Length: 166
Figure 1 (cartoon, rainbow, N blue to C red):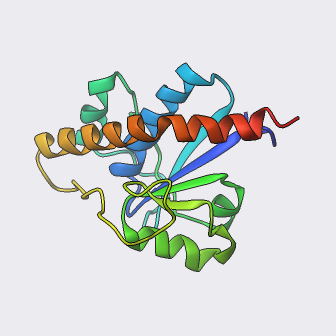
Figure 2: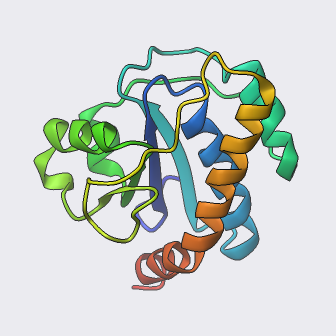
Figure 3: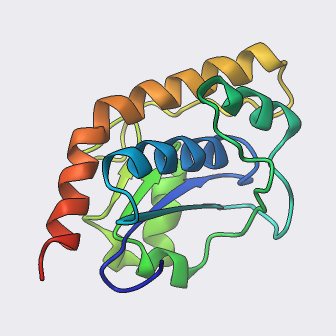
């Protein structure tokens, strides 16, 4: 599934156990309905360690859309992940800045999720629910889902531009 014609989307948050895995699961589900097999969605954390599961509440909140992220394993953000991604969506301005520090050539493909498709890093973050009760995770998941729904036509267009350009 990682052939050169597959569109690669990378979500970035801090620990890669809450926001980015929820976004990854939700967008993968949406894209499997819209463009089956044409896109792969991954996630990483700017301060993430390797091999941690999504938090219990992130797994629970994702079930709102019947998204199963129970098998998620966290991974740190690396230059290779940044370079291989076609589109990078970050949860907060500082994540976008970290991506650009890791790879300045990511400019033009990295966006703050709430601002997409505008390239500015100035804007609101999707708040980190870590350590908060389940209802806050549910709110975070629904906020991410709403943003993905709003951005889906633009994302699908980008997938089509790459995967149909043969």
